[in-house]
Length: 396
Ligand code: SF4
Image (cartoon, rainbow, N blue to C red):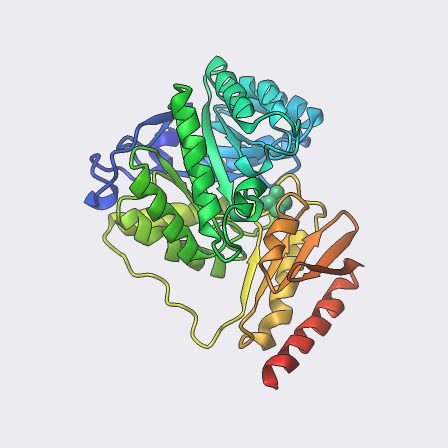
């Protein structure tokens, strides 16, 4: 297999992409690549196949690595996925990261097969709710050390630690995210574990910029993984990501990036190409940002899908929602389309209309309010009713 390191990053001399300034973060090794510490910026991606489908997942991991992903993430939720991961490991040389969400205890079983473990501070409370989160992080750090893994503290706007959320006013979306990232970083430092990076992801590019700037100011030493979560379908998803990542990278903030796009599985490598194109443009001094869409107020966010997606029609559904929304471009609203319950209920909370997929039905929400669960055939006409109702409201 070609050198992942060479393909995954833009060469530079330790002074940032294309000679731009780069923060002197600590270097974190993930298998054969380094994140931070003046190393080339690493492009990452994630498998969207079912993890328990060993052949399909190994094939996709190889496809992403060959496209230039320095780290390939895989979701693991249960023992069947763990078993599959052990087999996938034998079929790919890619540096693998595992994505733990609600089941943090699986870390001990997946760590022997991967180079990095991503945990989400907002999901630690689901398992063993009475055990303090500090104990859980200590155990995760010990597990990482034992198996030569790095960690990512992956904070996501749709699943922020509920305890921290209560400490901030509802309109302060960034406060709890930042507090969560900072407290986990402080704890890992106190534990003497330094091999970690942090991500603060939001679906709004401006909030991604703000959150990462603020974190970088307070923790200039910690490598940052940049991304816009649920950026959506291309080309809009690429444009949103560029609007967030290019200003940050230009300021020297960001050590690894992911462009999260809603794509059919066989086109997942386009995420990597989009990431490499951002780095190539910066290296060449092309800093132009995609213009904000004129006359378009409607915002559609959709998740990139992963092993957890509840129904294979998810990407098609997102495409149909976008097509249906064409006549409503002037509506100043956000519509969220999410593939499963992990981030679905949380992410749709802040949208005006939210859809999140179950195996056979799609949940439809208006803000926090659940309107019902509809079959994959019924959901579009039902969404259309809601759009018409909103359009009528805005016209009066
Ligand atoms: S919402 Fe669910 S399916 Fe979509 S990327 Fe997140 S975890 Fe995966």
